Structure formats: C-alpha cells, structure tokens
Image (tube, rainbow, N blue to C red; front, top):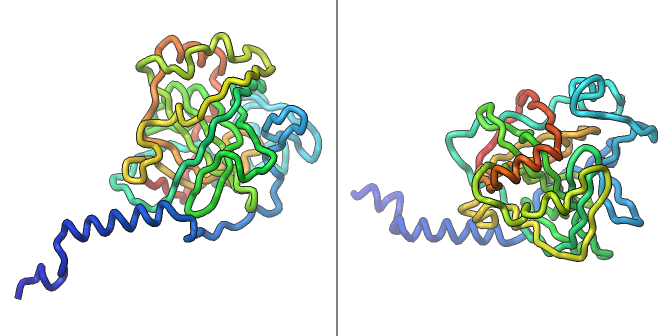
Length: 298
C-alpha cells in the first residue's frame, strides 16, 4: 500500500493552495473575533483636547501633574517612584530586547485600514508626535483589525535611539503607531525601525515642519501614514513582525499594549537621521526584562 496515498489523498500542490486560500479567508474577515478582556481599575492613559484635537499621554497622578524625564532623578530608573498608580515597576514592561525566534507562525490576523489625515505635528517636550484626524464618527477613522478587533489609530511618534533592541543592538530611530480599542481600552502599537540609507521623502522637510521647541505645526496638507511602513506591510504572507504583550514605554507605563514590531525596516538618509537625533535628544527608555513572556515571530 502506498503510504503517501493513505495520508495525503490529494496532491501536495492542491493542499498547499487550499491552505493559502483558507489563511486569506480568515485574514479578510472579522467574524472570528478574539475575546479581549477590558481594562479595569486602571487610569485611561490617553486624553484628547476637545479644542485642538491633540491626543496626548496622561502623566498626572490622581490629578496632580508629574514631571518626568529620560535621565537624572526623574528618569526611567525612578519613574516607578513618581506615582503609586503608575505601572512603571510592573512585570510586563516595555521596551524589551528582541531575540528573533528561529521559526515564524502565522498566528495573528492583522490588516491595516489607514486613511489620509491632515498634518498635525506636536513637540510635547518628550517626542515629535503626529496626531491623526479623529472624525466625529469614530468608526470613520483609520484603524487596524487585529484578530477581529478594531483598534483606531490615534497618533504616531518617534524615539531616538530605538527603544526596542534586536540582539542587543539599537537602530537610530523607532516609530510607534498607537491604536486604541474603544470597547476595551487596550492598545495595539506597531513599531517600525528606521535605518540609515536612502533619503526618505516623508522626512524631507524635517527642519521646516518639525517644532524645535514645545509647540505644534498644523497644515491642511494630507498624507497617509502608510508611507512610513515597510514594503508588503499589509500582505498577510509577506508581513514579518515580532509580537508580545507589554506596556507603554512612557509614564504611566500601563501594561495594556499588544506590541507588533516590524522586522523589516524603512530608511532615512544620514542627514535626516542626524536631524531627528538632534531634535529627539535620546528619548528612549532602556530595555526591561522579558521575564516569563515570549516574543513571537510572524
């Protein structure tokens, strides 16, 4: 008896094609919704200014504004001492050092539905942040679908050097795209590394458009944030990223983040990276222990 016919009654090519079709079908639908536990007994980490639309991190402690920095007595080593309601001394903190797993698993259903937005750049004293248009009807905004749950894009911001490391090495810049699920309060953050290479058209006018002191730059010029994503980012079979459960990398360090850090990078020129480094002033939190958590590859 032919054992191949016993266990595989169809040609391998047919089985492979069927599997690929199944994966695409699963990825394109939102019916298989993942059960996500809402955040409870935790402060809302984001707030929106109803006048300007600016979306910022809340860094108050029971209503009292708290000053924090990236170095010195108010630096990362002391964030946990600044407010007893912050999670900065928790066990699921970010960023972490990523040691790439040897194998990939197609275990995350992730699709991007980002739209054009006006240009709203803010220097908040800690980073350069691009706020995303928030329509009056929230469901009209940009979002990602993650395992059947919608997370709406609030903003993206930059860190120099990168906050996550790969095998202990930093990249010059890391971009964080911050999404929030309005039903659970949980966040999904997409991280993208910037490495030195060709000039990046999006960063062409850094010196002209980025506020060099605390303040904002607003125009009606529109763009789609996907210009800062690596090629093939929205292709289920080509997109390659690492994912794990973690926290915000700034106070209040809330442990409510689904992290997805891309393993393929985008480029910026040497001059552009120098400009970003000069404006961002080493605004990165050092890596924290992974503990019992796993970094997975997709």
